[in-house]
Image 1: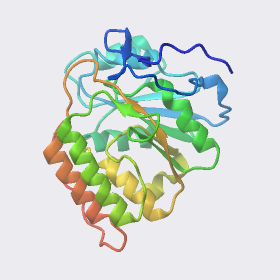
Image 2: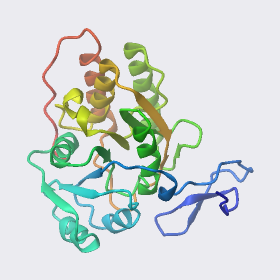
Image 3: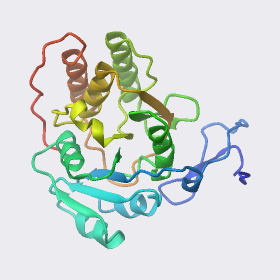
Length: 276
C-alpha cells in the first residue's frame, strides 16, 4: 500500500490543538507508512475498556479516533463530577457505561474487564495520551497467536511527548527490576495501552486497585508463560486536565507488586488503593 507521508519532522498524530505535531529534532527520519484498520484482518470481536474520571473535555477526541474494528466501547466512570458520562453518550450513543464500585484505576479496569463481552479486550486511558488509531496493531498480534500485547514507548517506532524526567528514571528502574526478577527482556513497563485475550482473564488473576495493576498484569503474564508481544506506541500529551498519577507513591506500589508477585513468592494481599 502506498501512503503519502507528511514531512519527516512531522508526526502522523494530531496535537492537543488539532495541528500536526513536530518532532523534537528536524533531522530526517525514515519510517514505514502507517497502516490502517482495514489492512488487518481481525475476525474476532473486540471490547475497548476505558476508565475515566473527570475526562469530559478529552472524551470527544478519544471517541472520534476509535477505529471501526472495535465492536463495543465500555466506559467505566469513577464517580466523575463533570459531564464525562453524558458527553460520552452524546459522542457515541452505543457506549456501555459501567459505574465503578471502588476507588482506583485498577478497580475501574477490573470492573470493565468483567463487563466486556469481546474475545479480545483492549485497555487505554481517556485523557488523549494514547491514540486509538494504534489499536489494530495490537489486534494483529492477538489474531496471530499472541495472548497479551503491550505498548512500548521505548522501542523503535515508539516514543513519548509527555514523559517527565522523574517518570522516565522511575520507569527505567522498575523495568530493570521486572527484567531481572522475571527473566524478561521488556523495553517498557509503566504504560497502560494493552490488549489481551478475554479467555485469559482468569489466568491474569487481577487483584490490584491502583495504578500498579498494569505491573501486576505483566507480572502474571510472565509468571504464567503466556505469549507476550510489545508493539511501538507514541505517548501523547494529556489533552486537558492533570494526571491522577503520583510518580513516587505509585512507583513504590509498582515496586511492591513486582517483588510480591515474583516467581516463587508467597501470594500477598493487594495494597489498599488511594482514591483517584
